[in-house]
Image 1 (cartoon, helix red, strand yellow):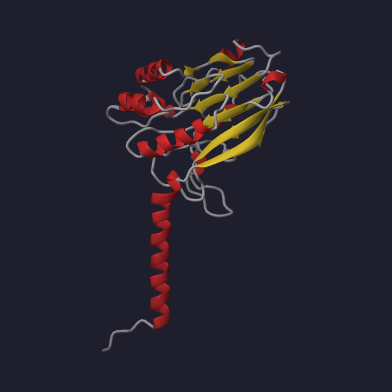
Image 2 (cartoon, one colour):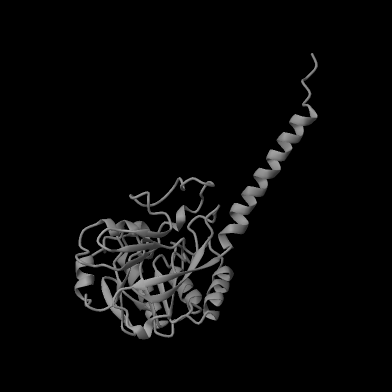
Length: 282
């Protein structure tokens, strides 16, 4: 009995599908994870000192220094930001991914982190707390390295960039989130801006009368997103929190960065991001 022979049309269709699949896979693994996008937006802040209006604040997030993010890519990203000469730089957590020699590696890479003319500030993410987010010694060692490099690390604490109060929340998954403690240290009658790695924190209690913006990361925007559909995988309870700006209750706003790095080195339709905000009187 003769074996069935593929028609030319079927053969070309299968070949085309294979080529397209290979191209998409190559793009997903080799192109988009390092195709950094620098986005820009206005950031209106209530009670902002007019002297700070027009100043720039750059947000980086989820950099994930480790074995799956290229050091060269990160150094190039830092250099692109440094050229912008930002007034303020904030990093909203996940500086590292778990690997041997992670603290020494972080010290080497973050020596090139761009600095803000008015200060460089950070809060920590779950990956900064080591295995299963339960190794505070890892977070402390990382914080020490960052402070030695001129970064102000805020875990339920407050610091100033000019007259702007930067409030850094502790990480949710690491069991460090204490908004009452953090906000109690700030002055509600002066301009405030909150950094909180995990966007799920905005749905929890403890925010009191806070009525400003919250800058977050953690989601990576889902990393892979089908066109016109939401990303299938998100590490948050509130599936609305993907990336970008969100209007919240009680006169609060949320901005979620897509992040610079990845845990798994894949991205599709969710390019890595650095956001340049221009401060405006709100």
